[in-house]
Amino acid sequence: MTINPPLIGVTAANLPTPDWDGRLSLDRDGAGRLYAEAVARAGGLPVILPLTRPPLAPDEDETSAPGGCGPGALYANARIFLARLDGLLLSGGGDLAPPPGAAAAALCRGVDPARDVWEAALLAAALDADKPIVAICRGMQLMNVSLGGTLWTDLPSERPGEVAHEQKFARSRASHAVVIEPGSRLAAIFGQTEIMVNSGHHQGIKNTAAALTVAAHAPDGLIEALEHRAARFAVGVQWHPEGQAAAAPSRALFRAFVQAAAL
Ligand SMILES: [Mn+2]
Image (cartoon, rainbow, N blue to C red):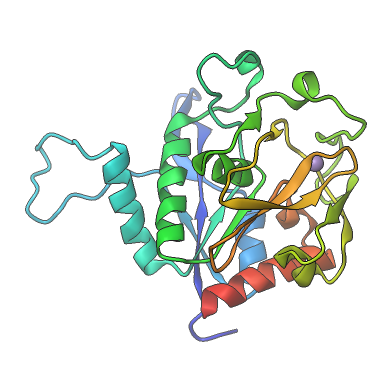
């Protein structure tokens, strides 16, 4: 075990949890343990980032008007987190909030606009500080939308193809191939240009943000990985490497991430 492992922030979801009376309430933040385990196995120290309002300044009064939850305050708070963190893992989860008027909006699941804006602030702060980023599934979609790209709101109805992107079995098993772009960072990390991945996404990348470059496709042409053109280390994958922890490409990705965060 390293003495001073890099500190990796893992984004959380607001999870429905039974309260004392058995009613579901949304007052607990958490992330699937597989993300933290994958970071730890690669030599990083994972911490789960709650969806908090920014902390009060020492001279602020608890009773003063909150004002602190707009995008500017969230970004300021994210910068405070990123000053301590060595890397950011944008975890998977529910769909991103669809743009106004999206035809398939009713088909979205698990939308949490508060999570979207907080993660956008964390991403911006991580890019501004040039801290390494891995964005998984929903996280990759968030990175694309935050930087100006667009999504298919509902893949089955808007972009049907021969690949089933929502596999009906455990995520520890792979379900479709992805072809990695030669010369990409992921090609260097994996040491090969075709790997088998699991797939559990309902949305997908439509138009890629100008700051990002496509690093992998599924056999049906759908974008499966994105890399930031300018950042030191910012990669997104549409699959769930944390669910295939024993697979060599998954281990290589988390190791490369943690090693970059340690620099
Ligand atoms: Mn897929």
